[in-house]
Length: 104
Image: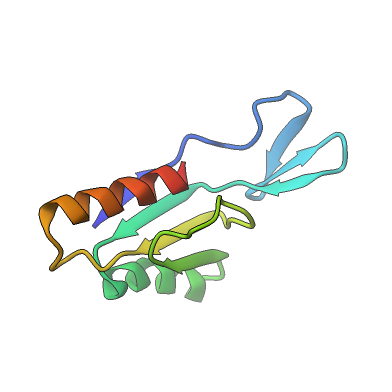
């Protein structure tokens, strides 16, 4: 199970600012900023922290497996549950790297 703080705090343009997990831009566009991403080796591991944040009123997103499409509609707290606890080392590493790439 891994915990990653993401360094992509919104657009790199000075025309946007971060406010309550969102980048608010001069052009009126609002983008959600992912602050924390977690990759878990199983469903239970992913739901532990996601459930705690949800009960505390924080917006979170739990994804089962690495999504097929590029990140869209991401939340400030993203969780990816993988089924790699019993996978081969090569498969577990491949899936984890794919999840990390998706989060970035």
